[in-house]
Length: 109
Image (cartoon, rainbow, N blue to C red; front, side, top):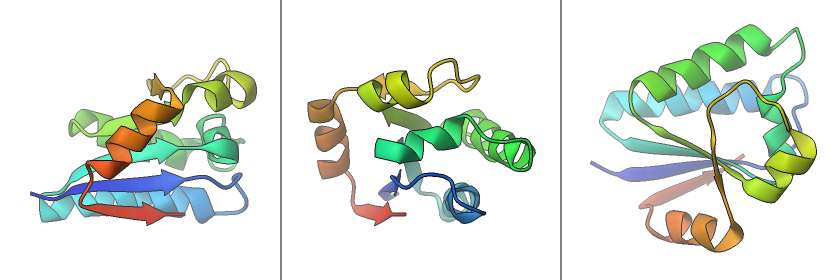
């Protein structure tokens, strides 16, 4: 089993971040341990607009149900996505670095 991180760091623009989440769900089919990491403006994915809310919810709930990890930079989460409805683990910068170093593969979006 590979430990894979999908890093979402850009602001939601069109379908880009929703596609990253869809791909993250797809990675679970190959028996990977998936960690979705929201950084910088990417944390705004956790406060989706009405047009993408259903897809974001579906992908995040699927990943959570399957036991995969959803994490975000705590400072960015607090400043840009406070009040998100999604259960995301807030980490500080050293914890995020440790998580990424422990992964076999890191995919940046």
